[in-house]
Amino acid sequence: MGLLSKRDAALLTDPLADNNPITIQVLGICSALAITAELKASIVMAVSVLFVLGLGNVVISLMRNIIPSKIRIIVQLIVVATLVIIVDLVLKAFAYELSKTLSVFVGLIITNCIIMGRFEAFALGNGPWRAFLDGIGNAVGYGVILIAVGFFRELLGSGTLLGFKVLGDPIEKTGLYAIGYENNGFMLLSPMALIVVGILIWIQRSRNTSLIEEN
Amino acid sequence: MSLKQNLHNLKEKYKGTKMAPAFNAIHTFLYLPNEVTHAGGTHIKAADDLKRTMNIVIMALIPCLLFGMFNAGYQHYAAIDNSLRADVLANFFTFDNLWIGIVKVLPLVIVSYGVGLLVEFIFAVIKGHEVEEGYLVTGMLVPLIVPVDTPLWMLSVAVVFGVVIGKEVFGGTGMNILNPALTIRAFLFFAYPTWMSGDKVWVYDAVNMNEADAISGETMLGYYAKSGQELTVKGANGAADIVTTYGDRANELYSTFDKFMGFIPGSVGETSTFLILIGAAILIFTKIGSWRIILSAFVGAAVMGLIFNQVVAADIITESSKFYGLMNTVWWEHLTIGGLAFGAVFMATDPVTGSQTNKGKWIYGFLIGFISIMIRVFNPAYPEGVFLAILLMNVFAPTIDHYVVQGNVKKRLNRTKVKTA
Image 1 (cartoon, rainbow over the protein chains, first blue to last red):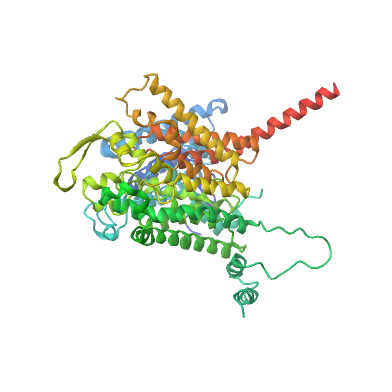
Image 2: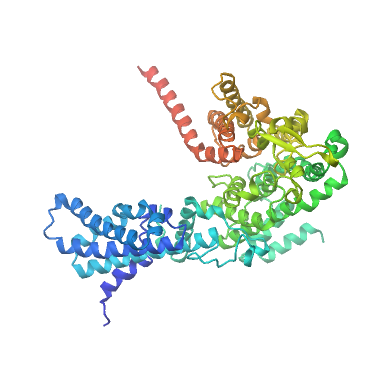
């Protein structure tokens, strides 16, 4: 037996693929569309959500027996808001430019459906260790999609990755641009993020047909 | 052995294999299938299957394509030597013009069909169904609605996107929500705006001409949008520069006859309102295109144009406004310039994405025309809105139909109630 039991390991791995919060549960789409034009922003967003969801799940799980069920949503909001403010302040202190790019979407982590969903569906009914694993699993599942979308949007939309000009310089016409290649401006617009997410869902479902719902 | 027999044998040989749909498609595209229904029972036979329908639309488009090929050359040479415009008819149907058309326009057609049909064949083989005919018309429409200088690789990317995202993900021909040709156009517009707008893309090689020449590469809508602005035209052969406005320059270069016949810069096949109307006549006569949609689209555009004219007449919008130029354009001129006529006749009438009910068709067409002119006027940076208006109404078409049908149901229910009461 390794570090984790089979059941615990499933908490980590399930959300990565067959129960992915974005491609299967279709939660947290708003931020996936809004901030994925740059890979860097996607990574920061993924890490932020990892922090908030991992820690938040533990906190809620520890408090699960003392939260009156009538006001549990408010308690959950307070917990997630506290964590989000920490993330927000850290970003403003150490990565001001980036925090401007992410703008309101850091604050909107509070309303990210994935977080409230995991609090409600998992942390309120499970111990802190399992809640932690579940939080990490879901946040990574979310992050993987975010980073994949961010990768394609930045590469095809701006010709860069993390700000490095991997395809050459569009103004001086080096690399790919020398033979007439041009950046795809559509990739920088939000509708294209939706289409990229859609294509990821398509690929996933054609690889695993059991995911396709019956009408 | 005849070609038909060869194709039939080929088809039989690959029957049951993965590649079968590809060979079936080639065979039935050219000939009637060899299989006939067995004796006994009554069979209804009609010639108007989907392939024939598509072919008629293509035939209606051929005049526009040929005209577009000549026009590509004519606009190129006229931009270099303005005196050609003095006698359009003599200088239009020349071999030099056609040659530019062959060099510049034919590759667009070939790439459009090649890439599009390749995607269709791949999907047919993967999904194991027959190759669908849907791309036949799309493939002809696409080269007609892009600027002549569009790079071929861009067109290929857009075609792949349009066919896969615009059609195949929804289930293929007949299931698509959006018109695939317009999806391709919209993709190009949003992805590569510098190649789809401005005053350098509409005339072949305008980028390399000097400024005075290249200014003739502006579309009519571009001229009118900037009609009040000052424009300096460099004098030919050392003559003094002429200072004029965009509006005056447009009227000096192009007569109403030019605009109606299509001797103006624009996307490859959409300039000639006259030939588009001939195409419309073919579509209406064969009952492939809905005259309700075509007519109501023109009416909608005229109404919106009239409203804007009145707004200007009432001095609500004055010359200082950036919307003034196109608002002040006489309403019937809106019908002859830009892509409105082409969109209304060949795009809006797509039976898959348009409204199905008769009353719905009136509403659908009217709103297309109405919104087209609205977008045109309020977006002077890119004064063309037909493709956006049609895509928008494509999305609304099922809703329109729903309410028309519900309205009808309600009316008939009321009638029965009266009887029983």
